[in-house]
Length: 358
View 1: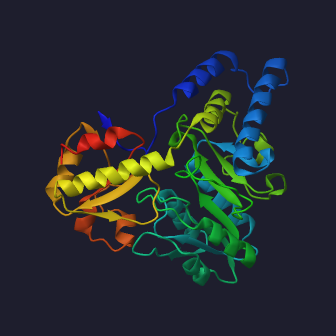
View 2: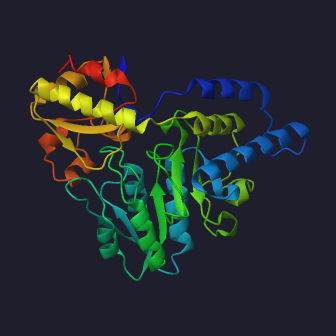
């Protein structure tokens, strides 16, 4: 198998596996228990919060553990929207967000909220200017992802965050594809809430976190109600081994930006040498992401139909849908162009293994 779908999920790091096995064997106590074993588990969780917080220049109390970015997105957007609806009921997001965000917004529209979907440039960029034009006096939340999960385009969230701060609007970003790959400083970027999944950077599935500015003073409503866990913001027993696994990934995941960028450039040169006609979707992209539209549909079909190659036509969450990708459509591609578009994401020389198949 040639695995080229790192935007969907990454292999778990060896050190993460080792740390989690040890955690399952030694830290099985409920961290909410008052006995010594429970207190030890809670101490480890608090240490993990500190490590994650230091990574983004946040406070440990601002890290809320969740099952992943989907839950974090729900808690952030629904929570902030309902808590601030007395100020207004307008939300701004983009037409190329992860389907999770779009479905949250569709739900909020049924609850009386008004949502503006900002269109991207032809290169898949959501500009600060387009967000500024969408903001109204009753806007309460802006949600723009940091790195698009299909194109790999890096959005100007620092400029968008500054704009939101100036306008007094809360800013949320889905950083599932960027955390541990790009530098993130929630203070410098004026981020009020940020969603992350561990399995995007060598950690286990089923765990992630929400950064929430001033979480202790937050009046947002929980999406999962429980027995007061995590300041009442997210119910449920904290999964100590999963949290340890995510923290281990934060400490050990290495994103080799320049090396990966060089591999992508070399791959495209090899396509040119084989006279394969293609078009790359998006600009200012994460080095490990490549959305490529082949002019000959037979080329893309060879990759998709050969079970040896693990590539996709878009988001893994929508990969079995018949309809064209909403992201590819939003940047002006036709339905036929969408069907001949392949998303390749990698971190090693595996990308060169598909050259012969083309």
